[in-house]
Length: 453
Image (cartoon, rainbow, N blue to C red; front, side):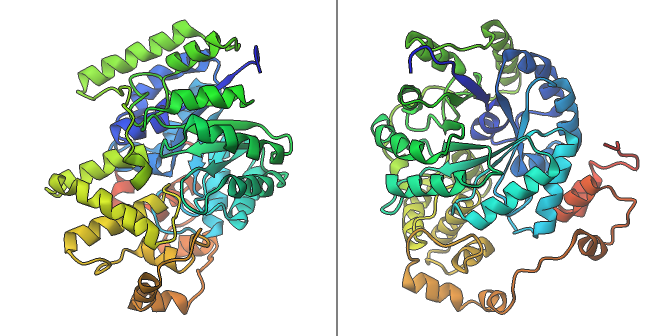
C-alpha cells in the first residue's frame, strides 16, 4: 500500500481530553479558540463529543452542551464533527427509550453534528440497526459502527470477521472501525485480525482507533496501514500518548517514512499544540507521555479514560491505597460476567461491582443497577455464560425480580414530557437534558431564551 493517502480522525477534543484529563479539561471558550485552527488542518472528521462529555459540560462547567455543539460546528464548517453513543442511553447510565434516542439523533443533526459513531459492547444487531435507521432519518451523513476489540476465549478473529459481515450488510452503516479502547492490540494480532475482517466489509471504509496504554499503538497503526487501513485516529499533544491516542506528529513521521501521503497542515498542528501546552501549564494539567509496555492491562483491560476516573473516585473516597485490589477484582468480576467487552457502560459496571466487592469485603453483597440489568440481558447476550452462582444471586434480588416481571417501557417523548411536567415551551434540547440530568444541574445552564435551530 505504498504511496496511499492516509486520512486522520482527530480525537483531541473528546477522547484525548477524556483519557488524560478525566473529561473535565476543555471548556467551550478553549474549544472555540482552537476551532478555526482545527478546521484548517485537513482532518477527515473531529471526534467532538459524547454523552459523557455532554454531562460533564453541564455538571462541571455549567455550560449548555447543545450550545457548545452549535458554536463549534459554526467555527469548523469544513470539518465534520462527530458524536459518540452506545445507542442505548443518553448522558446517564440508565437505559433510554427508543423515542429518546431517535430525538437525540434529530437534535445532533440539527445542531451541527454530521458524523455519529456507535459502540455497542455486545455488537447486538438490533441496537446497531435501530440506531443506524434513526441516524439516517435524522440526516446524519456518516454513521460509523465500532468493532470493539478485547481479549477473551470467545473474542477470536472469526468472531470479529462474522460481526463485521453482519454490520457491513446494513445499508445505513457507512463506515466501520476497529476500536481498541483498552490499547490491547499488538502488531502480531493485527496481522491476523485485519485480514480476517477486510473481506467482510463489503467495500465500506475501515478505520483504526487505539490507545497508547501498553505502548504499542504506534506500531499497531503502522502495521494496520501496511495491511490497507487508510484512516487512523490520532490526538494532538499534550492530549496524546499516555492513555490517549498516538500523537499525530509521531504517526505522521512513521507514515511518511513508509512512503504514504498525508495531506494535513503541520504548521497549524504545531499552533494547536502550543495553545494546549500553554493551557496544561496554566491549569497544572499533566501532558500525555509515551508509555512503557505494561502487561497488566492485558489482565484487567480497563480503558485508559476509565483508569483516570477510577483513581479520582478512589481518591475522593480516601481509598487510593485500594486501587491494586480493585484492579485484581475487576479481572475476577469480568470473568464472572462472561467476559463483557470493557467499554462504556459495561466497563463502568464491572469496575463499580469490583469496587463494591473490595469495599464491602464480601463479593456481590451489593450489586449496582447496571450489573443487574446486564445479567438480565438489558445490554445484549453475554459473550460467554455468566457464572451460575453470580447469576442466581442477582436473579434473587428483589429489584431483579421486579424487572423480570416487567418489559422495558417505551414511552413516547410526549408521554415523557408529561411525566416531567414539561410543556411545549421547553425546547427538545432542554427536554433531553432534563430527562437525563438533575433539575438543579439543568437549571444552572438553561435560560428563558434559548436559541432556535
